[in-house]
Image 1: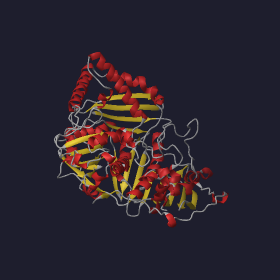
Image 2: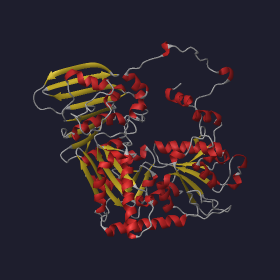
Image 3: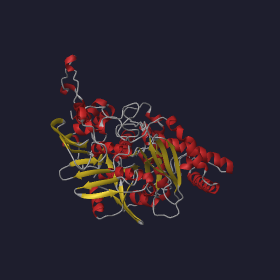
Length: 613
């Protein structure tokens, strides 16, 4: 299947322009209530609307808070994929029944027990903003709360976010749970009602690893139960290492506790695997997949530590060398975590928030033996030598590109493939697996690739300049396709939303600056898998949901890859380099490029896609 540089809505002009209302009065102003605002702007409140997994997570956050506070010992998630009904229950204290509290926390934004200055109900919590349950209610066609608390049983049922039924009865005897929230998402707000089960498993796996062993975590899918019981050490090994069963992994632990907060970390260096660092982290039991300020804080301390040791022992060292082969798992408990969005994918607390942990972390690093530190520094130094040996001298116009000003690692053939990749980590991994005769690698800072339709002085942009020099064709009136230095230009990004965004920006750049390359069929997008069967020497990419589900039914060992930089050289060779196993999708040139440019450059046109105008 071909990718096209496609167009947005039809643009009307001239006599066909729609007649717009010129008057603008106070009657045009509409005030939305909380439920309406969530329904109109789903993404603002729950992020991704591909499926309703974020709704389940919002309810799960509240149950986890009861466990963090020391009250809940059982947390269970139920998924009914046939009827699309989901439920979360716990045996904590239960939502207070008095003063109509269950209705308030389900229908009024910014309501909850986490806003008191003295943190009376929760010192450490996953849910922070008082948004979760309201969003779940607003985006569900059916929503029910059941509560056992203080010898009473309460039930509240909502339909289309409107309270339809409530009752409170006395209850004596044993209670099956304290709070149970059940709901069926409204299909008009989601592309699919099948939740991302891998994400749910990740949440429960992380929670089980970081909570005491006497807390049970259960996921029930269509009647089949999965129990989660994993230690932090095993989670670290499973998530961060190519071979978690390897016996000689030297692991360093770091711990700083400033009640009620804590900073814990595992550190190790993996040899004979991907050079890119693999970092997982969690904050208050939430996996924080995009890292953030806490990761940068630890990196800075590592860089300072190794810089000082390199000077002491006489090794050459550059700050980022200490990330070579780094594996780390960071677990934080924070009173006031700040995230980049409601979906909590990235921590944004200022660096000084973590300074309370600095001395303890530095003291732990100083406990690493001198022999081990020297071994690490030797590895870093050798890696730096290999990188420097791959750099090319300036070549004024031969077969290899001038790389004095670029990150390009060229190939020797004029019939090779140029892989344009996202970041140094992915680039470093491909360099280890490539054939230097046929495979050239150009790592670019993905977020630095500009929107070519709005950026001024586009040719002065560093990323665009490096791409132009690598291609060798020139641009604009100086463009000459006969000078192109590769048979294929391949965009290879991670298989996530950021990767797709970068692929769009690069494709627009190619379509506008180098249209003849696209028209000649030389530009491709590499398909990259999120999951693969990884069983020792067996590695099989899973390219779609159907292959993934089949592998699960067959009880194969499945690993999730958050990015190309997490794959080792052999795995990348299968996914990107081997003609028999890779998937390149050719990009074709659109006949409606002007309308596409207008779509990319106009916020108004983009909004039309969202609201369906």
